Image (cartoon, rainbow, N blue to C red; front, side):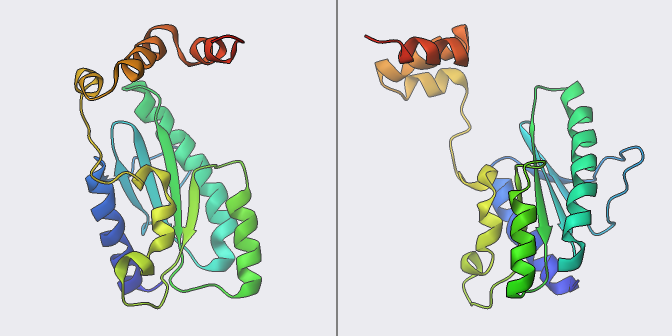
Length: 185
């Protein structure tokens, strides 16, 4: 794995992650699951991201190890906060061959870790285009989004939106959805 490519990817991801409240952090030690010393970890109060550099022929084994590590890390973080999401980025240092892409696609479609992407740089001058696959992480999709309190969000919505949000918060998602699915709602 190229140190220059890894550093570039980390800097790019760190910029977008910081915009939505992530901070780079030391990965926690998870009993019986060792991660690469090159792996990089970001934490926020609602999610975590693990970036793991790998060669194309290592992606499947890295994905399995990362799942165990992420499960353990989420369990640790959820002890002190609410349920959070875990995201995995497997970083390749160059674009894979067509044969490798078919194998990588199988790993990406594996439902065991639903929030994962396999990223590599594309040979273009524009940084966002070069690292477009990193922006597939849904947690990074809202850079610059308002991180307001519930009260702030309620004042910035219509009356109907505010009523729906209040109902969701008080009754819960499933009962609210059922009510809106009932005929005549």
